[in-house]
Length: 257
Ligand SMILES: Nc1ncnc2c1ncn2[C@@H]1O[C@H](COP(=O)(O)OP(=O)(O)OP(=O)(O)O)[C@@H](O)[C@H]1O
Ligand SMILES: [Mg+2]
Image 1 (cartoon, rainbow, N blue to C red):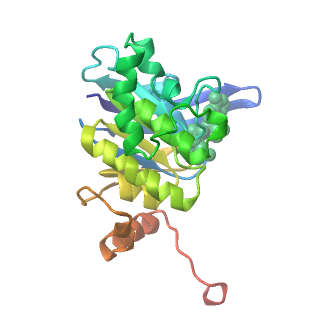
Image 2: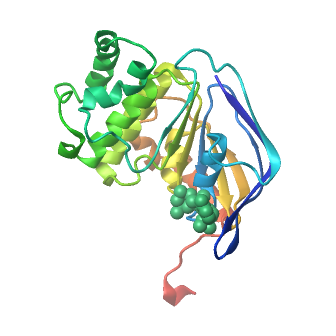
């Protein structure tokens, strides 16, 4: 299981139009088996932070350290992005088992490991479908199965359910939590949706500004499972209100201003 420590990390991109500061001094830590959500508005550097953790972007200043075992072929960090990245020329089963096959697992063994997850995610019987034949929600399910199948040491998820409708998103969230509670793989989950962050994570880190900085951190006291109805409880709404108030967000009808 991988843990992250990062200290005063800044990221500046050099572009044709000049320097763009994406992150301006981020410090954070994650624990083993922890489900952390990173929430914040568009442009606050959430994706840059994930890319930094994945090793796709280097800090301009500050440092970032990943520790913990990265053993064997599966001992890796897996990412699931908002846009599914399935191979269009592979059916859903071959897409889901691609990482395993690359790691040398036989087709029969890979399928035997994948099929229970297909079952659990409501995709039994869809193994030979092509990505183009699937709805967005179903494609994201395949991407989530692929990520969990490789037995990763950490999962990085960037608004993986951002493109699906609210009802499907609710189902996907519950399916993800089911897989997560069975594995307890450390997850860093990026979302702009505060409700989603509170529903899923054990800790929510809120970013603000441009360049992005940590605005606040919130420990979420609920255990698991977390049924959708939790979002309608006074305890949940209190946490949400606290986060929104911290961000200075409040809504009043125009006539009351
Ligand atoms: N490769 C890049 N080159 C130049 N600028 C970049 C690059 N990647 C991100 N940026 C800039 O860094 C800032 C943060 O972008 P980032 O994509 O991390 O934000 P975000 O919080 O993920 O936003 P969103 O919610 O819209 O996905 C933005 O100003 C963006 O334009
Ligand atoms: Mg982003």
